[in-house]
Length: 492
Image (tube, rainbow, N blue to C red; front, side, top):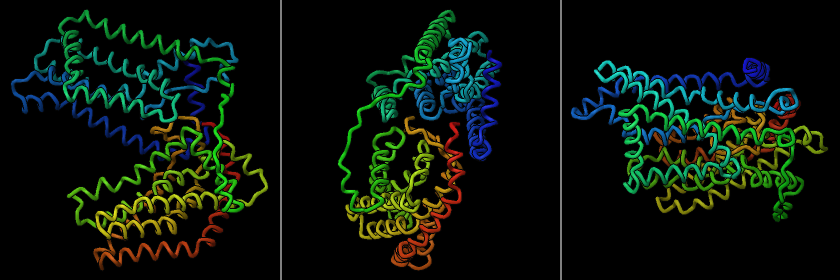
C-alpha cells in the first residue's frame, strides 16, 4: 500500500500544471538546501577542533551538549515556520477500501523523512566520526548519536501537535513566538536553566545507555498521540463539511463615495479581516510604519541619506507590496464566478489600485513624526509616497497579470509561501532596488534635493498617465483571463 501512496504522489507532482511554472523556485530552494548542507557538514567536521582551540581544557562533547537547547529551540521554530506537513489529498481515498490507519501511518512516517530531519545528520555524523577518531569510546559516541536521532524525531512529531493546535487561531505564529521567546528568556536570565537540564539528561543517557529508553518512549508516545489526532479527523463528512461562522458585519458605507468601484473595495476589505492568510497583511502595516526606527536612530546609518529612499518606499508602501503582489490571486477561490459577472474589468482593478493608494497616503501621514530625525527624512518619505502611487502601484498591478497560483485563504499566515512564484521574487527589483539605486545615484552625482525631485517627478508622471497605464494593464489582464481561470481551478 505504501508503494501505491508513493506512486500517487509522484503522479500528482508531475501532472500538476504548476510544477513546471515553479521549477525556478525549486532550483533556488535546492541551492539554499545545498548551502545549509555544506554549513552543517563544515560545522560537524570542524566544531571539535574549534572548541579545542578556544577551550583547551574543555570536553568538546560536553560543550556541544550544553548548547543543544538552543539548537532544539531553533530547529522547532524552523520546522514550525518552514516545514510543510506531508498531507495527502485524502478525500478521494476515503471512499476506497483503504484503511484509515494505513493513510495516517504513511503521512506520519513520511514526515520523518523531511529535509529538516536529515539536515542535523550532516553535523551529527561527522562530529561523531571525529570523536571516535580522537579516542572517544565507541559505545559512548553511538549512544549520544542515537539519542540525537531520537530528539530529531521527537521535534518532528512535536511540531505536528503544535501545528494542529495553532492552526485554529488566526495569527497562529504568535503563540509559538511567545512560547519560544519565554523559554529562551527563562534560560538566558538563569531563571530556569533548560540548557543545563537537557545537557544533564543527555549526558546521563550517554553514561548509562539503558536510559535511552526514555527518549524512545517519549517518541513512541508522540507518534501514537499524532496517530489518534489525525485518525480522529479523517472522515469523509469531516473533510467535506463546511464550517458555519457568525459573520461580523462592519459599516463600509464610507466606500460608497468611490462610486461604482465601492462593491469591489468592500469585498477586499472583508477579505482582509475575515481570512487567516489575508490578515497577515494587517500586522505588517505596523511593522512597515515603525521600520524607520531600525535605521534612523542607529549611528551606523547617520549621514547615509541614500537609505532614506529605501525606508520611505518600504514604510509607505508596505501594504501595497504585501497586498498587491498577490493580485488577483486573493480572489482565486471564486475567480471563475467573479469573471462570469457583468462588470467592467477595469473597475475591478481600479478598486484595488484605490485601496493601495489610500494605504500609501495614510501610512505617509502616520509617518510624519519621522520629521524628528530631520526634514530630509520627511522629504524622502514624501517623494517615496509619490513614487509608490505613480510607479510602484502600476508595476505591481502589471505584475499581477502573471500570477497563476491559487491561494487558500483559510491556511495559516505565518511563513506561508502558497501562491508564491517567480513573479513575487522578481517584482522586488523594480519596487525597491530601482528607486533606491536611482536616488543614491542622483544624490551622489548632484545633491539630495535633486534626488528628491527626481523620485517625485517620476511619480507625478505616473500619476498623470494613470488612465493610459491602467488601460494597458486592463488589456493585459483580459488577454490572460482564461489562463488565470484555468490555473486557479487547480488545487495543487
